[in-house]
Image 1 (cartoon, rainbow, N blue to C red):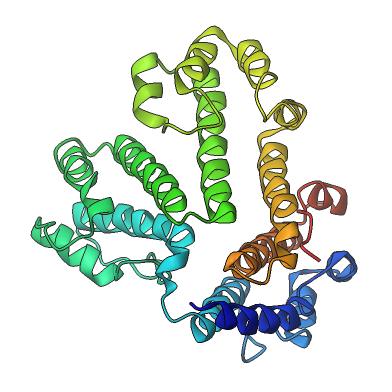
Image 2 (image 1 turned 90 degrees about the vertical axis):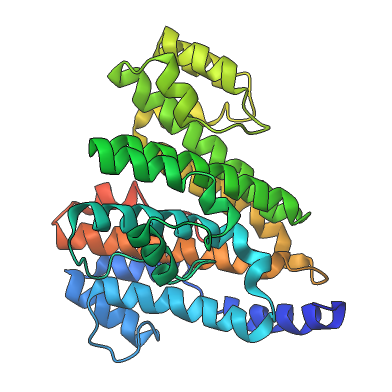
Length: 322
């Protein structure tokens, strides 16, 4: 995309940013008595299409709108593969498990990816992976064999999840874009921390940790594994000497608090990109802002649906981009 195209695209994104939900909009949603009222309020704000979608349909439509908008402004969406490549691995998991169970699952595939889900499913059905892209070929044979011969869906997931993290980080770095590289680094680091926390609680061994964690620049994998094997306090002490020191308080609070901390960190990091009109960064920031917005709305809708107290819902809400 040429520089003048960036200027046009960024100017258009600026106008779209005014429609993003802000804190006041979240307060309005929180004041709704139930999920149905929330959906009506969102429909009034232009969410969905017909106004009678359920929550999952509405949120899916909003994600589709985001990528359709970006597609109108960017000739080659592959510049955003850092965001999309993880969906390929989700679809690979779904395809392997569908073939293993010999069941015709519905609505289990994500359409926003870099590879057609039908191609992935066909490759798994035929046990012929030559037409799959390199990032999927890195793990598909091992994951397929594990699932078909042992039925161990947990190990299958671990193999694919690690490959997904590695592919995301590789793609983010390859873009030479600061925001995309930062997003990929934070995603892998957060995943490694979550693996460490869960593994410490469940007593996983070193072999498991090496298999599950991906290398990244901001955390030393070997040191994090050693801390995990030692205990939770050792994990805290290790993190206090990294750039994720501020996360320790959130981790001690709860796993959902740590997830919120990670999402808020990304939003804080991308806000300065609003003022960089000569690159794709403002477009990438808008995509992340929309994903954050959709996730936050999902939290509210789920809370209202399940009669969770407003205080509990508010504890999980993310910071908004605007």
